Image (cartoon, rainbow, N blue to C red):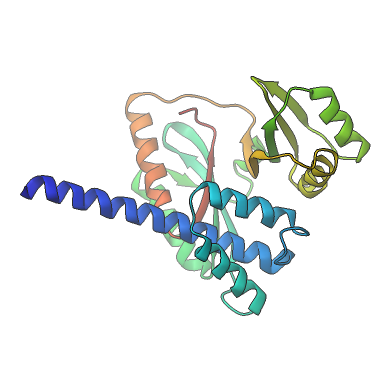
Length: 238
């Protein structure tokens, strides 16, 4: 039993750590979103989308409620958005988004991940110009023209609407997120979003092979273990 028990124990600990990181990530994001935009999901569409996303990731209700209560109180930590970018293994382009209460610590932790795989952290704008900062809203549907007309009537600056296998995906600039979501929900009140988020989308993607790919996976894993890291964007197809 010894070895099997130890393997199971390590596996459970790993799963527990992963869950803790997911809970912490959503707790910070929900807290900051509610603190900046209001605690009522009906009037803060970004918060509503974030809560729905957290539920899909099986974040417990008490974690969500605690973050909202902290935002209602007006106290608590002050997290700031920190964004780092640079070149990873195989000349990949990477953007790392963080929420931090200590920028010096976070920068050191992120830079350490770059250093361990002999990658290069860059200055602001060094790779982000090769990405679009876009809001993505995806949902079941097939009437592309109806959705596009709805958005245009609401004066939304639409980048693209894609239809594929019964799913419609709307892309708009990140500053048009709330307007686009509000227009869609007003036109289609029962709409349920499969994807509801703001991302950095690379203009061009590429693939890596052998050692570069292995090192890239290691790099992403290192970044994911940093507590302050919220999102990682890259131009590599996995």
